[in-house]
Image 1 (cartoon, rainbow, N blue to C red):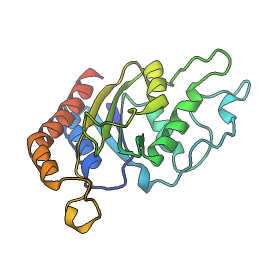
Image 2: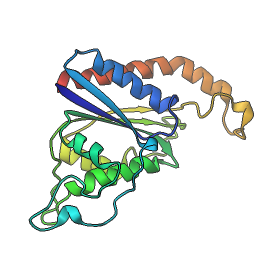
Image 3: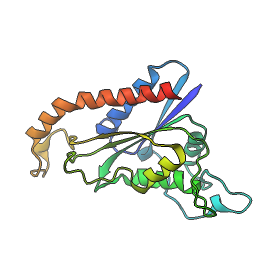
Length: 212
């Protein structure tokens, strides 16, 4: 049985990021019964970012899985033996969400050796990065997954990417102080691209399941 872990770093359970990740689940699950897909919601998990305890660097006991114990521990242990990893986050202020950043600190810092600065994951697996953002492609202000993306690439190989632009922030723009955005333009863009983006998510999940 092959396993894919999907990590949802967005706060809303039924909006842009969650909807795309659900399509990834459907795509991966369509390949066959020998694929197990598990989704973890970071906003439902009680954990912290890297505590700088350096337990993963102790001589003779070094580990490439975080040693700090909290609700994230079993998730990190499960990822260490998984066959595929999907990371999904909205873009907040040009960055991934704080929850995703904290998670990635815990995931990737143990991979880094301060002896030779090599980056080694417990297991080399397929990775898909999903990023949703209100900004357009032309006005994109987000550097993807930032420095963490480099660590992932070095440890796992080049990840697959699905970056989705010009998403809805809310369902009803009339309720909020959002005059800087044209709901009409956003609606037109969504009607033209959203189903296509969902299909890309489905295809990415299926592609990962077929590759592992």
